[in-house]
Image (tube, rainbow, N blue to C red; front, side, top):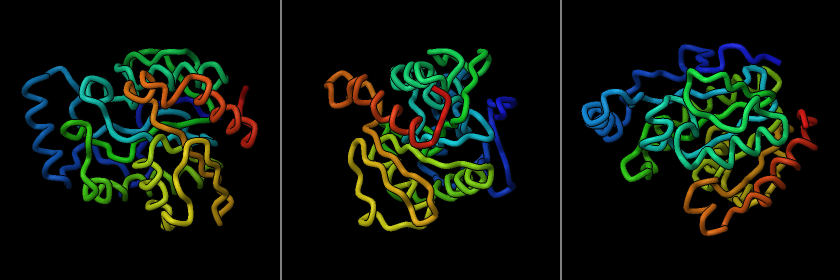
Length: 226
């Protein structure tokens, strides 16, 4: 497996662009955020993890004081706590906490990205922004499968829909539900979980046990490190 250069990955010219301003609302919002928080990343956030991953995890979008601050998905705020603790428990991460891009965290056999690469106001991207950003996700998935990727885990319904859109598949054929596991026509496995957000975990919509069951199944199906 490849664990070098995990901070960012740009496999093709039509893939992730840190200077992207295609979504005017998001670009203008980030302009304001950079003024308010000059030390923040405050740009589109690249994916993170193993370049030869078997599992690609798709989240929603960067959080204001999380990925938008640190420049790494699910890093620096509450949303990443359960995710990285669980990946560590199942041998998919070198440590149980993701603090900053300068730390020594590595992911094994998995990679993390978002459906929308930029921080959206109120943490809610508009459908048009999900569609606009989908070309980047599609490029990531193409690169992922070209390097032996076998499964995708969508965290929440927006990530679920974005993943299917990137694959050119119909939503109605693969409905979202927590714990769902779809086998796509290509043979790629597509899994669903509720998003590990503060709201979901504090309301017990998603418990630690529920999330661990999803990861355990994926590890078994894809023969990942455990």
